[in-house]
Image (cartoon, rainbow, N blue to C red; front, side, top):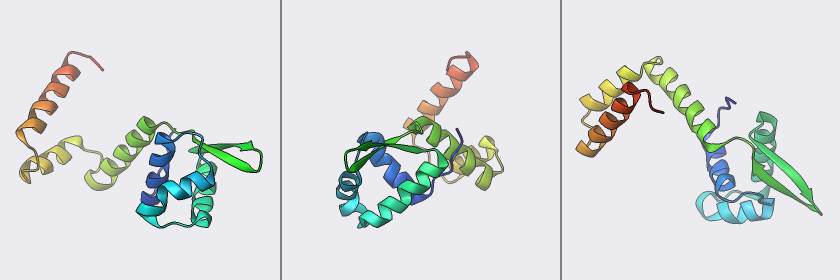
Length: 125
């Protein structure tokens, strides 16, 4: 499922991925310190996320319990593809070239990428 999440939606989804089955009150409490969002802001965002298919809810008495319907890995993959397409025209090589030329890669990063590329050569996931 390809769903584009705004920065705020990522913030809310991260809480839902960490705290499944959360009520609006629980979400408001969890996000208050970081965002200062009111419960009305969270309700609006949850409605948008439900419309996108990223979140579902169940009725629990007077409260609704919200759960992430979009797996974190799917959201990350979609965001990565969106970023790569928007910034580098879909070229992973261009992105890596930019990272190397800006010297943003540590030796540990290079070693990790080398291991990933070696796995790809061998056909391993």
